[in-house]
Length: 173
Image 1 (cartoon, rainbow, N blue to C red):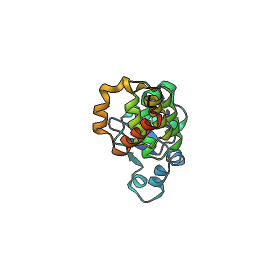
Image 2: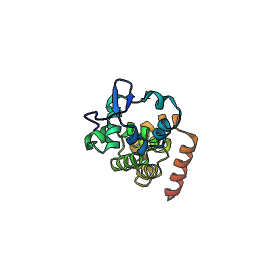
Image 3: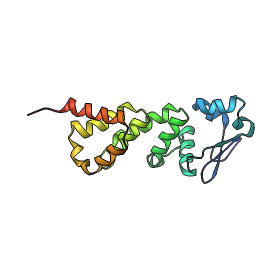
């Protein structure tokens, strides 16, 4: 139905293109979309949703997830965009899958970004996984060059949590 645009009744404008979808399916998976189509909002009247913070390819991945047609490589490529959209549109299934996926491949080159993402989207398991990677497994030394910049931009609460994690794993000699 999606790929063939069979009985589509909503147009989605992205930053670089247009997609077609079904109001009922979007509303069934997201209380935000449901609200758009139930209440007297411009989206209901115009049957158009403007998603100005996603490119066509990422939005296509979002629809693929919602419709159950997303491929694994498409999910992996767009999981950060999908996470942002899941947060914005309150789609807990996508949020949970993205968190689980981001936990699977934490490494020294992405741990600080993942920690920031975990804090930003309130992903407790991902945050715990990143903190464990850094402090329990001692990988904080691998990111010592990047940590200064991270602390410069990190939220105060996140830095406090990191400090508390250091104290919990620190074993004086």
